[in-house]
Amino acid sequence: MPKTHSDIGLIGLAVMGQNLALNIADHGFQISVYNRTTEKTDKFVAENPNTPGGLVGAKTLQEFVQSLSKPRKMVILVQAGKATDAVIDGLVPLLEKDDIIIDGGNALWTDTIRREKALKEKGLRFIGSGVSGGEEGARFGPSLMPGGEFAAWKELKPVWEAIAAKVDGKTGKPIMGAQPGKPVKGGVPCTTYIGENGAGHYVKMIHNGIEYGDMQMICEAYALMGGLLGLKPAEMGAIFSEWNQGALDSFLIEITADILKQKDPKTKKKAFVDVVLDTAGQKGTGKWTSTNALDMGVPAPTIAEAVFARCISALKDERVAASKILKGPGKKYKGSKKALVAAIHDALYCSKICSYAQGFQLMRTAQAEFGWKLNFGEIAQIFRGGCIIRAAFLQKITEAYARNPNLANLLLDPYFNKTVKKAQENWRKVVSLAAECGVPAPTFASALAYYDSYRSARLPANLLQAQRDYFGAHTYERVDQPRGKFFHIDWPEPSRPQIEA
Ligand code: NBP
Image (cartoon, rainbow, N blue to C red):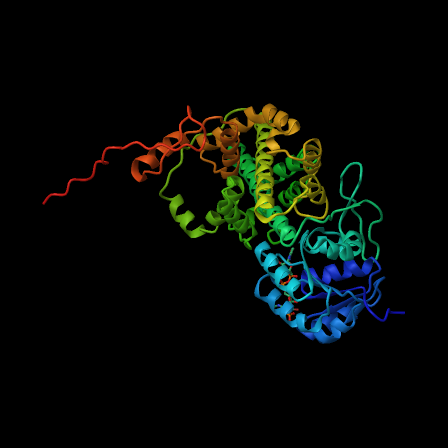
């Protein structure tokens, strides 16, 4: 017997909405669903008649709102931006005090702050929740990053904890094997309250920035194995499978191994990866992360480098033309294959540590900027299952923040410090070989420069300050005076080109 009112509602029945609705229903919650195009709602409900909780289709927003138990909880999964605002505007006149709107789209966190504030003034509650894991995650367990009023989160918590991905409490490994109608039982849910207003969407954005970095680094490892050792995709696939058994164990390494072993379904002979065009698209969250890093003055060069790597990949025609004119060094690697593969592994791991260090630095600065109180250990924990960056490595981050919740930079944690110390010789070897042989490895090199800059007690910015003082009287501080005391030298007029009369 269906309940008179549904436990929760969901608006937007494209890929994410349909899968998340089925996930919610699989956990015994009755869910009302609404989509702008009614035929989609009708088809979806008709195709899924026997879910444990039950789906209730609504033809109008009014019918949808009236079908929900109070305080109403409704998830929006539509395009971020204007579409989300349009749906909220449609809902507001139909809602009552304390009802809760949950935006599960990839919203810009500042939009979430704005929406939460505007809705609060109307007596309504708003949660901006990052949802990671794509279609598969939404269906069988995503990583969920909710931000908003804590009391509103408590209303949503039973549903969010039920549908989130689960990891083993001891090992931190994702619990797999969910089937339609049969979700996994037990385990630690990959969701936690992140913080006020836009905190959840901010953390989701950083997750995506880190994802950009991870993906590009793996691509560089692949390019180096191909460019320096001439390995074939299937051989590289086997190496990635092996790496997936160790410190690099992660979803992205696992799928890379599968991709590299895949044959092209059309030619049946070629490696699939060899027939894929080398231009990468992007939806913008990596750019948002990098823009935010620049806005806050936080160094996140490796993440930005990963975004730029996609940008340069998109210049396909220009690159093809340039390849006929611009020549590289033409040097070949002649050393041991085994040693270089091991070195690439270490370069990847060290670069990854730096990229995550940058992502966590961003969150650390943002919490001060936006007045949040973020728990970094818990954030790493909820990334362990369901999401694209899920990896064994995240357990090490959780442990690092358990050792020191106020850790200034992940690199300073004893585990990461020791790991980089041990592996840096290999990392440096790979970056220098890449430069010598002309194989682009922008994130590996950028991460190494970040590491060397961060560990430098003195950088050449002294000269930079002097230059600024010279041409702009921007003043400088002295090493032999307290910080905050500024000096200026009356420099001679810079030489100017002589203009003949
Ligand atoms: P889309 O982002 O493509 O959204 C389209 C859906 O929104 C359609 O069902 C559309 O209805 C509906 N919609 C409604 Br209801 N009102 C709308 C309006 N006023 N304007 C435009 N569309 C409206 O769906 P998606 O790919 O499932 O993604 C949903 C959200 O989840 C996005 O914010 C996305 O960034 C985020 N996300 C996606 C992924 C992923 O892997 N795809 C992962 C994580 C997060 P219609 O049928 O009438 O057009």
